[in-house]
Image (cartoon, rainbow, N blue to C red; front, side):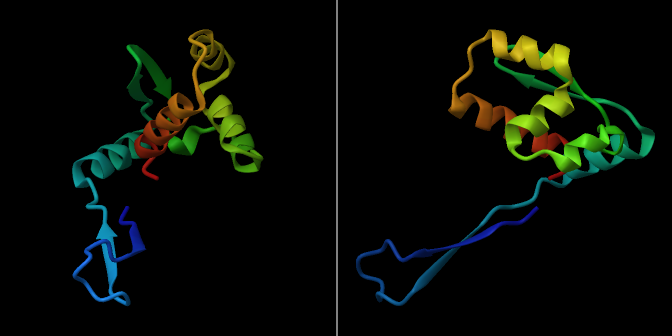
Length: 110
């Protein structure tokens, strides 16, 4: 996935109306791995803070994830109740949750 973000120029010698565009380079290997796992229906393992979480293939996510009102609810549905409770035992912070959510999104091809 390529993300472009427009920001004001940070170079003091640059004109004030110059726009700097930052682009994230897609990880083709990761995207192909997700596509292959999805095609086969394989689960995907992610590592987070020394623990391994097993995610279903994105096409095998419970349909309720589509109706999730927020990221917390979506992650809880994707992980399943047992893994969610295991994650919560570590008393995660919002920052930690954001990192886990990013890993799940990357593993899902998002």
